[in-house]
Image (cartoon, helix red, strand yellow):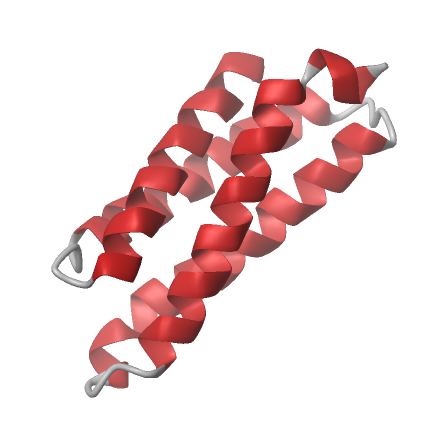
Length: 109
């Protein structure tokens, strides 16, 4: 089954989705939310795409490799944006999760 074959990717996707959702919420609590707009936007994109790919893997989609390639690109972009705000712990942890997920996605793509 696809989900057994992609266990490491599923774990990375789930951890990234959770980190992005947490970062998204925490960014909305920052004093200068406007400065965090790109981070918030990418957190949403990344979390949604990770969740979608998780679902696609669980149903053995024939597009796993293509979706993983797109997910890697979005995770990398989100990680780079969060890395700019690494003085916030939530952004630092999100960047780490995004970079790990991007790598896991590239390994499948």
